[in-house]
Image 1 (spheres, helix red, strand yellow):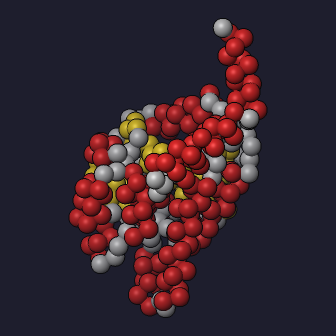
Image 2: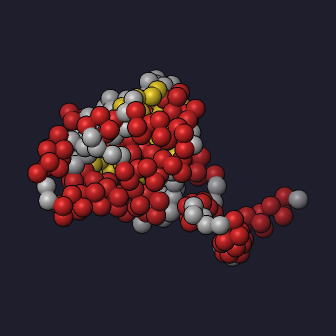
Image 3: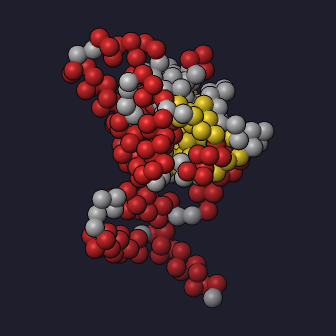
Length: 256
């Protein structure tokens, strides 16, 4: 049975930890309680050695519509300190996703807009149903999708990022895949099964190797080529010493 903590459903099935945003009546809109729930669930999944993949999804028809109305209303009357704390709460979630050792997958059905699109973009992999929609409409109300810019700029080209962030338009799942924002698009009818099959693919590879690869990929973001190569060499050595690598090499040699 899934564990329920206020606005979040958390369930581990086999090697997959599934985090479900559970505010369908609000299109799974973000508020502080929901953000805290996602962070707690990610930390719980990260501590579970049986978990090979985390899937974040939304209850019922939408992934996430962004900040809820109450949160937006609070912005207009909030102090500078309150706004800083609110912004840093979302920043902490985006950063935590990268710190989780296993892949974090966004499974997007329906709309992923504003902060919801930011949440999806911050995940390591984005899987979308055929009718899913993505967009950053913040500029329409004078707001800026500021923190997600750091993520989006690393996901897609500068020109595409500029277009998505400044025009406020929605794009289809196929367009998002063409932009590089989405990894795979699956049929609406088989979406849940396809997501599960995709996530289970991480059972076939080394957990430690994936963790090292994820950390290396993000660590080298702003490095020079030389520094990135040096860091890669260090990780190469670490990987050689892991139990998974030792067993993997021994098994491979037995087959030869």
